[in-house]
Image (cartoon, rainbow, N blue to C red; front, side, top):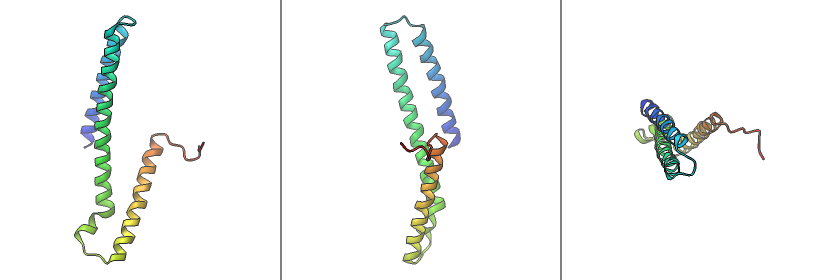
Length: 111
């Protein structure tokens, strides 16, 4: 999974630099410059969306295995399932909070 995300990141970077060079070398106001900019943003958006889907897929499997996977294979009493489900949601909240802090969210800066 990590290699796929790394490869997508590298392809995204290469395409960005290629289309950025085409955009800078084209004369101002030309259709080539406009098309280059549109294509660059479309490709970047598609690659970014693909990487986002892969990351969410990985987070889903992490949540399944660490939080709730054993509930499927073992017979637990009802209240154990409720407590385990709530604990998994707490862990999932910490996981999403950690990802948000890594991407620059500041919990102390609330507007």
